[in-house]
Amino acid sequence: MLEISAATYNIHKGFSQFNRRFVLHELRERLRELDVDIVFLQEVRGAHARHVGGVAQQAQYEFLAQEIWPHFAYGKNAVYEAGHHGNAILSRFPILTWDNLDISAHRFENRGLLCCELELPGAKGALYCLCVHLGLFSRGRKFQMRTLVDYIRRNIPEQAPLIIAGDFNDWTNRARYLLAHELGLHEVFESGHGALARSFPVGFPMLRLDRIYIRGLSIRHAVQHDLYPWNRISDHAALSAYLNVP
Image (cartoon, rainbow, N blue to C red; front, side, top):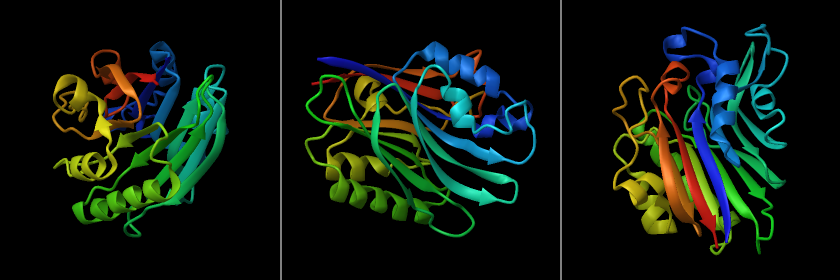
């Protein structure tokens, strides 16, 4: 049985809570300490015109991946005059294919769904990884969740192992019905600890916004990273999961 690990993190474009400090270098060190195989990132800058922290001319996902995660994919979602940002997946395993789907519900909030097909050593088939960042408004999230479900049904075999991770902004946990009841997915903290992780705001986590859903995998354990030094980085907590592939 193959053991793999994954983490999800909304990195807030490399700034700390309330945009007080640029923390991309510190963020890279913390992610390396986690030593996970796959990293799901939201709000990661792909390009920016100004020099910020000495890495403005390099995409943030490339900077974070250096030397540790040789394979990565980026989905550009929000485009503006100074650059763009979106979702990214960093991986120790080869990425066979990737796709970025525009799931924006309206023109004021650009959102995307990044899907990667990974090659696992010794596994019978590919591992599918989806990185999501859903909208702030209930009506938009309802459309985005339905789009996510339809995409999975059309493009991912039912028997294939699957991880969906990211910032769901799902205040009322409507994702549970769609993902669990319609697709047979399980959230790692809900399954392992009896409740979703409180991940936002990181200084005093109250809202259960960040999730890691799995199908065709088993859970060894899951960890929430919200204490020092993690509470000095983003406005979200990072989550990690340690999994078995049959």
